[in-house]
Image (cartoon, rainbow, N blue to C red; front, top):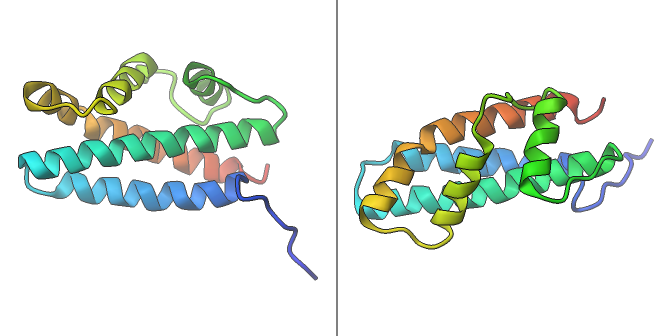
Length: 135
């Protein structure tokens, strides 16, 4: 019996990439805190955040409830048990926007301090989506 084909943007495929990216983000957070490793961790957060959104968009599209904006995606995740509704979505989205602008100095340090909590939230999102991908 042949496995059904999945598109490159299917939730199953994207979740595999999301897991890999989360692992790299976790590794980046374990490095010593130098400007180089701080900037690398911020970049890894940006990549992981992008992939979290792509996973949510693929997941919601497959469920017939596509989300367009990051706010819609996070709201859907909270409403459907994929994420805690206690996470400050706007704060994380603002951090992503700032990181995309290549922060330096105190601004980069401030964003870096929050990466561990963002990592934990996105790891939980991954696990919850993985549990629901076939349901």
